[in-house]
Length: 216
Length: 181
Image (cartoon, rainbow over all chains, first blue to last red; front, side, top):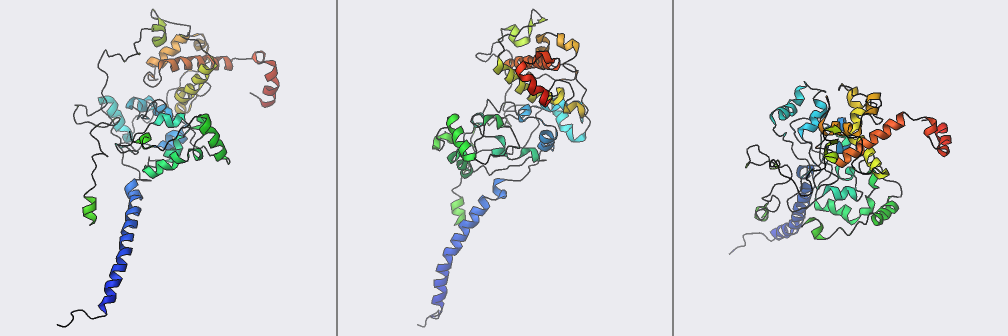
């Protein structure tokens, strides 16, 4: 019986096997790119909110401290989303007939919740506590970025384990004096590593890379 | 093959059957998973029997003493809390010219007028706790001990705004004269 395939097709099969390696590698690479892209991590993507709240206006425009609204951030795992009462503290008189703020007034009138869309969300198996980070000298802007420059709030960092570990393994690169944690415009000094190592000792920052630090 | 691999992905560890803070809940009528306290509930250690500490009054009259000693650390705590919660309206000096009145909120009186300099400390505590005029209550935002620290700091501001050169320690006068107030 005559051969169906000509001898020259051998080269095709070799190329195909060889090429498959690249295709597989390419698939892995593409998966990684998608996984670390804003499509997946939501970095720099402003979410739709019931009221277009501007941190830029309230923080750098008016000079409000983070803790005016996020009152529990120093004592609790949860920073606290302010109740409508906090909004109305000023907006009972300012912009009090703005249609943009009607959802806020309706919430106050009817005692219903304003349903904000969470921007920072951790998976259920990751434990996180705001207060310990602040009390050990990690500033708001280290994770949340320059919130005072965000007209609409978006996620500054990918919230993936690799990103958490980058800091947990090298705290001295990020730690700052406790009195500066709420400073949005804080710039690390030139000798950050020296300062960082000093603060790690002073604040008794412990080993932070056990699995159970976050997965408990 | 990709579908076979992806089929192994499950989210039941990622989305666990519990509520995160302030997560919505279809179970309760108001849609909130964060439940208000049942009326009359007292958390352990939070029974408010000390009228002086929690209301700033004794027998319904504003007190003029602090319920616990004020030291430097407490005053600095008061300064920090004043700057966070009060300065948007009252200004960092207590003048009442903060950024919020500048944007149209009703002007609060200056903390340095005669009436408020003579007011007992319990009055300030009561205003922070229950609000006054256009000012909302800050009771849910500032715990009682911090409110007292703020009241003490208001007294510091009142003193500083009415101080004379004679109040400045001699060793600090030169510096003050050089740098201005």
